[in-house]
Length: 387
Ligand SMILES: C[S@@+](CC[C@H](N)C(=O)[O-])C[C@H]1O[C@@H](n2cnc3c(N)ncnc32)[C@H](O)[C@@H]1O
Image (cartoon, rainbow, N blue to C red; front, side):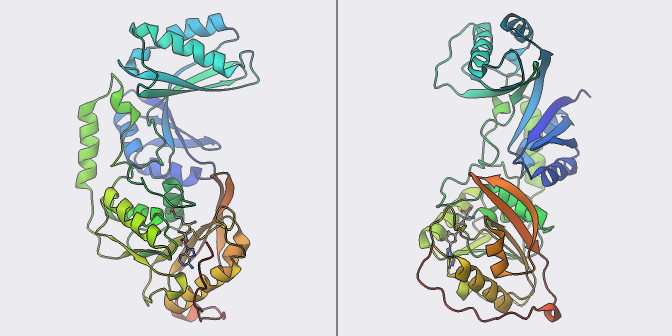
C-alpha cells in the first residue's frame, strides 16, 4: 500500500514520548530534528494519529519538494501540484512560510504567489473569512518543502477545554507529563493544583482509553479526497476500545472558580463521572495509604504573581509525605529549585518551551513505607491565597 510521507510536529523536548506514541499506533516514525518526527503512514494511520496522539501538535503530509531560485520556477513547479486533493470549494488555502539561506527569502511574496496559483485553479474567489486549509512551506538552501496540515487547529486544542484559568498547561504537555512517569493509567491520580483540570482530564481520557481528539474537528475531513469510510472505521475502533475505570481521579484547587472550570471541562470531555473536583487548599489534602500518582503543575511564580512560593511548595511536600506517603510524584515547574523545596528526590525528565517560559518536568518514584525520608511531615495550614 502506498504510504504518505508525513511528519508529526511536537513541542521540542517531547519527541521521545511523541515518537513512542506513534510507534505504538503501528506507524513507522523517527525523530529527525527538534520537534519533528518523520512518519511513513497510510491514510488510515494519518487519521488515527490525529485522533490518538496525545502529544503531537499537528500532522503534516508532504505534497512537494523541489529546488527553486526564482519566482518563475517556483510558479511552474507549484502549478504541477494537485491542490484540488486538499482544497475543496469554499476553503481558503493559507501558506505559512519560513525561509533561510535561500535566493527566495521573502516569505510573504512566496505565500502570495502560491495562494494565487491555488485559488484561480478552482475558478472561484474565496471569502477572507472562509474556513482555512493551512499549508506549511519550508525553504532551506533553495529547497522548497511544501506540506498540507492535516490537523488544522493545533492538536493541543482538544475541543473540551473552552475554559481556562491564569496559567493553563497545554493538554499535550499534561499528557507528556503522564506518559513520562510511566503511569499505566491503572492507579489513582491526584492533581492538587488543578486549575482548569487539564492534567486530571487528560489522565481520565487515558484511563478510559478515549482518544484526546474525540471532541474536535480535523482539517483532513474537508479534503476532497477525504475517505469517510476509513475515518468512520478509525472512530468506530476507538469507540469499541473504551475501558471501564475502577479507581479515582481527583482534582482539587483552592480557587472555587478553578473547580467549577474543571467540572465544566470534564463534562465536555465526557469524563465528568470519573474526575472528582473539589475546593481544597493543598495543606488539607485528604489521606490515602495506598499507591497512586500525584501529577501537578503548581503556581510557577513567574506567570502567576505570588511573591515567595517556597513556603507553598514546602507545605505541599509535607502534606504528601504525611497523607500520601507511597504515591509517585510528577510536576511541571518553571523553577526546579522550587520543586526541590517540595521533594528533594525529584529528578528532571525534560526541559521544554511553554507559553514563553522554559519549564521542566520532574518525577520521583512512589515510596515503600520503609523509604520515608527524614523530613518534617506536618503540613501547616495554608495562609491566605498567594496565587
Ligand atoms: C499553574 S496553575 C495550574 C494550571 C492547570 N495545570 C491548568 O492547566 O489549568 C496553579 C493552580 O494552583 C492553585 N493554587 C495556588 N495555591 C494553592 C494552594 N495553596 N492550594 C491549592 N491550590 C492552590 C491556583 O488556584 C491555580 O489554579
